[in-house]
Length: 253
Image (cartoon, rainbow, N blue to C red):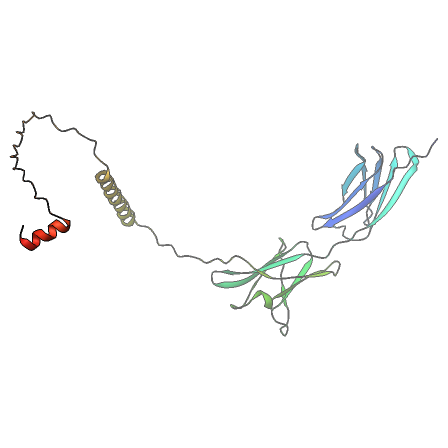
């Protein structure tokens, strides 16, 4: 009988939601046994593609996880992989915003059990902030604080890993005082709107061209022809020219 291998491959994914074991075997329907550091077990079966996923119990945040895979009833096919839970360093984000004329530092971390400290200047002592159940924190800042003056540090109480972040500028909001509308104010507004509409309609009517209307028919009028007297045609004396003209002027002929 030939030996069958399941070719077990597995890894862990740890984030703010906990630890998940994901893996793959080369055959479907393999039995996967997972042993956690707290002594608890999980048993799953690989799917048709040989993949499997299982969620670690809450509170499992460090230590080794033992993963075993084998074919049903075939002890010789068993393979084992040891995984180490590696919680990543926390991720912290923070912005400076202005709300109701107040300068605020607002931020968030991506996992529980994280301490946040803020340094406003290198010479000042750090300020320890309380992180709520939503992993958020807030700090009132001096009025003229700029992002370059603020340093935010997050440290995991479980792993001791730390992270820092650059502070940016967030959305600035301002409370606007809105006047209360009375019935008289509303009536005045409606009256003005109607007046403006009437003026606009009248101007439009005046600018609209009227349709062409033909003039009424009139009786024809005879216009007498003007008689023009023909003036007698006079013949202009031909002007002498050349030598003849010269002698005519000289002797008067």
